[in-house]
Image 1 (spheres, rainbow over the protein chains, first blue to last red):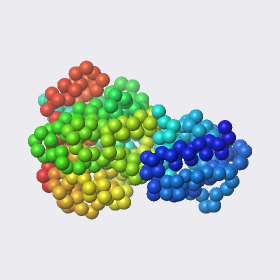
Image 2 (image 1 turned 180 degrees about the horizontal axis):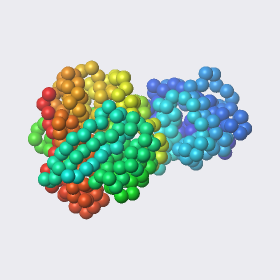
Image 3 (image 1 turned 90 degrees about the vertical axis):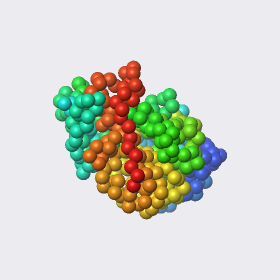
Image 4 (image 1 turned 90 degrees about the horizontal axis):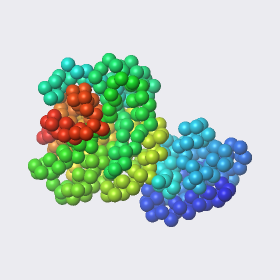
Length: 113
Length: 296
């Protein structure tokens, strides 16, 4: 699976989940994903709870997520939780703490248990 | 006399010393804050190990008990592991017993009634209390996601609370604790009324006092507050906001209601039992410890 495929799967899970849409109804953010090995940029955007994704740069990102592309793919496809690479120093996230926590919670609610 | 110390991630401004009598035994209680510095808290626990009868972990939970599952916060494990000789407790052994029964007692004596709406600012750390409200038929909103993560999503049933705990807590408990809960000076941050409507819609506001203090609106006219770790200053603040009744789930001594970790540490020091011991629940009830109801 490529990073783009993982992000598209993540987007589908978010947008089809009524509870997640309610949680994110007041959350509009631009997130830049920057694989620190391939430099192949991707983006995630939440617009009042509706999430989209794509390749390339995004203007004025609110969050920057850096990790090897394989780890980013694993996180957004649910094969790995963000905690493990974060605690190991393989995942760097820049942004507001609330936004970082929310993204963690979204991935756990989609893929957790 | 027994000696216990509560080592807290909270502010040093709330440090104090006092004495309580438990089952006929005098217990000297000291509270030592570390201003949110985990390493400093670990140093304090290491230095106190073997010198006191029991240690409490303040400003942090070690165990979150939700239904039949127990989740362990890793930063609390790191703190507790600094003690090799002295038992270390976090208050969960009290929350799961005293706080569960206090709701039943308040309901039985008419202090609260089931047509009142309940806001628990956090419930994953007080699941016993949430279950009691639910079992008695109260309409409950749990604000765990709202107040800890600013995700504006009220949890309305204990079943959903349990489901979210199963999905979130195995990972969230591995994260640095300051990502989950205000520590040190963050506990005394500015008032933030953005979620005021949850308070306004509730008749009973229960749970962690740091969350209540930070997010409460200007007026709490006629509300019932169920919490603990309040000081005389906190009581005056709540009275000024029009709170009708303040229920502390732990006893008030010298104007201060102790944290559950302090009560559990005192009980461990006096009885030699721990929350894992058979008969712990009976021991808690045998102490005659009960909360305090203050009409303000």
